[in-house]
Length: 203
Image (cartoon, rainbow, N blue to C red; front, side):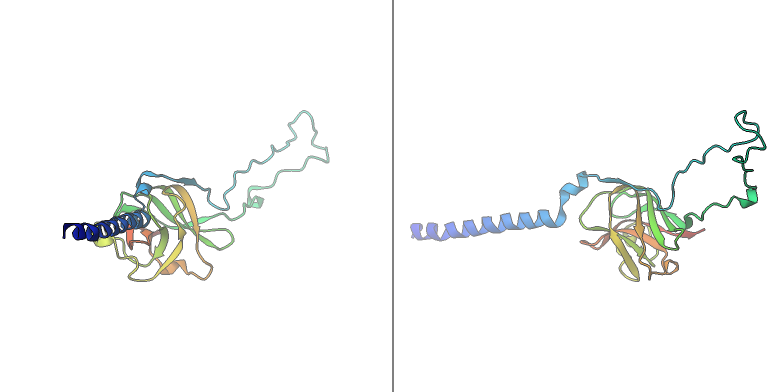
C-alpha cells in the first residue's frame, strides 16, 4: 500500500513543480519587475527649433571696404527682418504622481507646419511594462481616486513612452483636434493604471 501511494505521489509532485515554474515565468513576463530598476533617458529637441548664427554684417566702417563698394549692401531695416514662424506652446501643465512617483512638465505645442505635438520636459518616472502617452479629456485628480480615470472617457494613445526620463515629443495624428482634450497621462496599458498625469492650462 505504501509503495502504491509513493508511485501516485511522484507524478503529483512533478505536476505541481511544472505548474509553479510555469506560473513564476508567466508572472515575471507579465509584471516585468526588473524594469523598476532600469532607467531609460531620451533627450529630444523640439521639432522646428534650430540654432542658427548669422554671418557678421559688413559695414562701411570696415577698413577693408568703402561705402562706394558695390559688394556692400545696406542692412535690412528692423521691419524687414522677419523670422520664420516657430513652435507655439498652446497649453502646459505639471505632472503629478499617481501609482508611481512622477514629475516633469507637459506642453501642447503647435509647430510651424500646423501639426501638434505633446512634449514631455524633464520627465522623471518609474519604468514599467507597456507604458503609453495618452492625451485624454479626463480630469486629473490626486491620490488613488485619480489612478484609473483616463480610460473612462475620450483618449488618444500617442505611442509607447520612449523613456522614463528626459524630454520627448509625441506627435498628434492629423485628424485629432487638440482642443477636445485637457490632460495627459503616462498610462500603463497592461494594468490600466496611470503612473502620473498633468492637467493642461491654456496659455
